Length: 73
Image 1 (tube, rainbow, N blue to C red):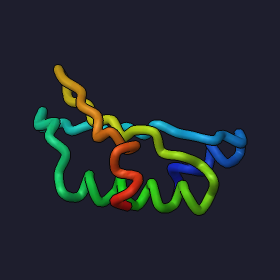
Image 2 (image 1 turned 120 degrees about the horizontal axis):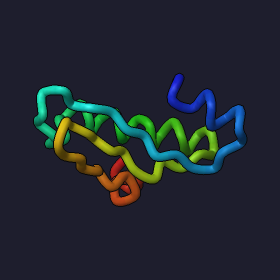
Image 3 (image 1 turned 180 degrees about the vertical axis):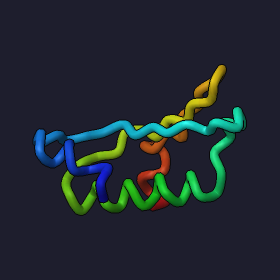
């Protein structure tokens, strides 16, 4: 996954990922949750923890608390 290319090159042990919702709806979608779970799984294979997945809109941000999803990945 492209998300991990720089962390691998820099030998990072953890990442926080983020993306925006231009619509202004900052509630995590089903796809957002699935992507977070897949990132956690990929990170585990690579030895890189996904600490959080942030969602930004113009006026608000929210996090999915990826750490609490570790067991459900």
